[in-house]
Image 1 (cartoon, rainbow, N blue to C red):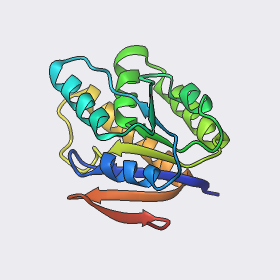
Image 2 (image 1 turned 135 degrees about the vertical axis):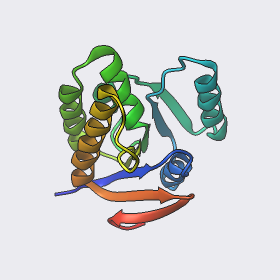
Image 3 (image 1 turned 135 degrees about the horizontal axis):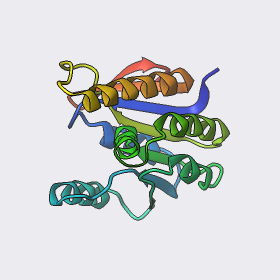
Image 4 (image 1 turned 30 degrees about the vertical axis):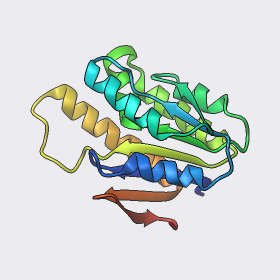
Length: 173
C-alpha cells in the first residue's frame, strides 16, 4: 500500500528535480522543512548549496542530515511538509564514511512509514549510463537502484524529470 503524500522525484543532473520538489512542497501551507544531505567538502559544492539555499524563502527551515536521515524525518512535526534533497548524496555519504547503508535504508523506510505529512524525496537516477569502471561506483549505482526501487514501491507518487519537465511514473501530478 503506498504511503499517502510520499513523492519520489528522480532525474539526471540539472534535470529540474529540486525546483520541481520545491514547487510541490510550496503548494502546501508553510512552514516547510528542508532536509539537506549534502556535505560542503569543496568550493564547488559550497556554491551549489548556497544557490539552493538562496532560492528558498523565509518559509523554509533547513536541517542538515548528512547521515542520520531517519532521525531527521522523525524529528519533523506531524503535518509539516518535508523535502529531502537528496537520497543519492545521503547514500554516498554512508558508503564513503560510515558504511551501514543497508541498515540505514531500512531505517529510512520505517521513518517514512511513520511520517504524517507531505514528504518529497529527491534523488539522482544514476543507472541509465554506462557501467562504471570501478567497484565502488558499481556498488553505488546498484545500491542507488535498490534504494529507488524500495522507495518507489512505497511512494504514492513517482516523477521522473526530463529537461525540466516532470514525467509522471506513478500516481498523479
